[in-house]
Length: 97
Image 1 (cartoon, one colour):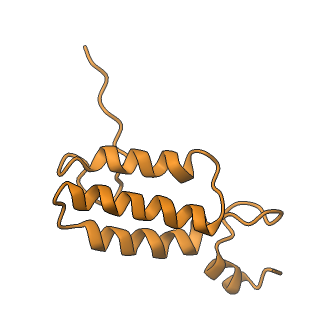
Image 2 (image 1 turned 60 degrees about the vertical axis):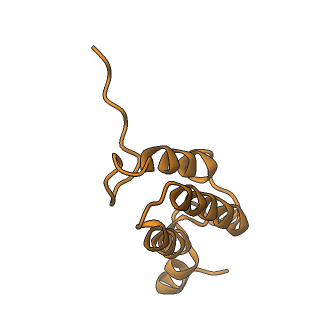
């Protein structure tokens, strides 16, 4: 009996175009390893995009745009500010810079 493969792609079908591997690498590059700077996030997002393009995935560009917007909103970590304090989110809650 084999264990089912974890689905790393939440909003797109992970079984198509070798997406799950790309999503897993993206998570490992940024999210699971505790985050990093905004530049680290961009590197992870564009590596994910290049993986999708290399596999002929028609969702490459929409996925990149979604990653950039969502990552900017929620996942950019800011030292000393705690988790979940993305740039746009900070503007909504009027958090100090």
